[in-house]
Length: 90
Image (cartoon, rainbow, N blue to C red):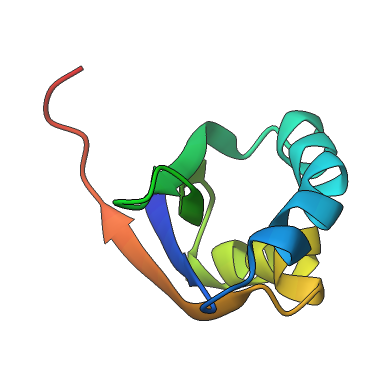
């Protein structure tokens, strides 16, 4: 199943994001569950959240993946949603 992880950063947390970015990117690249990933960009042009599409067996596996994300461990996110997603085009 495909699951979209939609995360929004806490306000004024760009420094925290940048400090943890190398570990986060390594985590993304090392995980076979990650099918697409990238940051949201705010009106000011700075990164302000993340969209990650995971291919997992069930929602429990998606939650486990999210719990291991260095961004989440660092307390970067104000909110995280995991939503089953159905790819139609692309």
